[in-house]
Length: 280
Image (cartoon, rainbow, N blue to C red; front, top):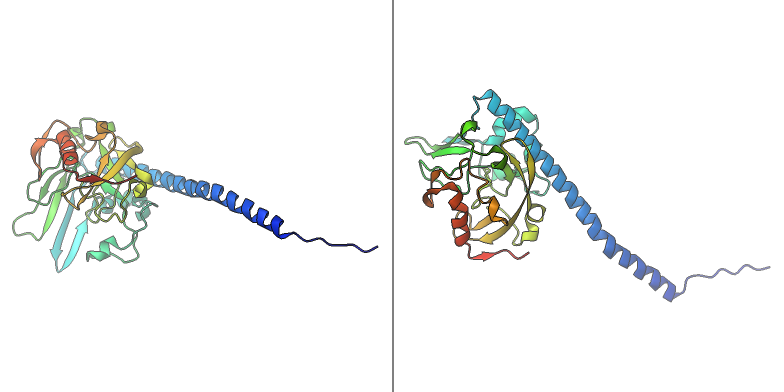
């Protein structure tokens, strides 16, 4: 008896290919969402660990948040919050976020010790709702005052006493950022090197990871827009109830480059200056 082997017909092959294509179209977005969920979880963990490092730091430094400072003396030297918290984490990567893949932020501006291969820090320090560059400014966050001393080629940001924080569970310590050194999470500088132009391209699709001054961490929904302030792009909480979460004391009058006003009035003022919002 002769055994006859029958191959697939062209129609059958096309049907199989079509089924595979349909399955790929269904599964690939699921895989992408799973990867993003993993990145968001890793970033939230980093944010939490950064917050715990801050708790240890303030216990060692008389309940004061970190000072930050820079000096230009032959070389450009800068000490940011993460430099001072790193001894408590033993790992620079704790201050990065998987969603921010940029490298060389320190070396690009000529910082001493910066390497082109260093991943950019992805968690910004809370200076307040906005960051200015004028002597004696106070923006209301964990930097009490911003100084440019006479005869000193550099700047200094002084920390605040933890006892000054009215609501630690509602005051941001660190949050996702696209700023460059100094790494802040201010509304006007937090997107300074952001390469995208949509809310979907923001870190975690706009679900920013934030750690708070009581040590807990959670997500806050943000949106982006264009504004003639700071870097030209601003990041704004979608929920107006979150506008004051940069403020150590929301009702305290602060002296930012936008003028003297209660800290919790700065974010609403920034919103009025937005010329257009990012598309989703």
